Length: 128
Image (cartoon, rainbow, N blue to C red; front, side, top):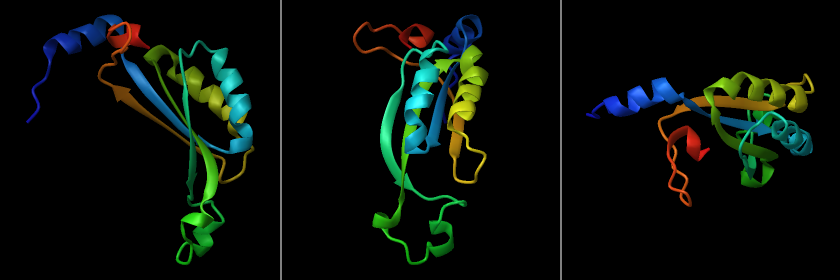
């Protein structure tokens, strides 16, 4: 059983919560999304090359016979932002990655308990 750190709860209430925003988008939308995110005040972003399939993928029809070589190439973006930026970040991703078609991708948001900058050793919101 995990004990609740009351100091962390108080700190988050005073300083603010951090959110991890993850998005799986089409590779051809990556540059536009990154450029738009830079303008929103996002402190940093990590991008991974990814492959996969979802409900709207061409593989959804043939997934029984699909192997890893058949997976669709995608870009996976990850950023940790102040809670106050989450709605703006989501809007920016939607505005720049959506074509209105199935298969455009997904956005996931979850709460980050803390962050630590390894170089400066700053914690919490100051680390991002």
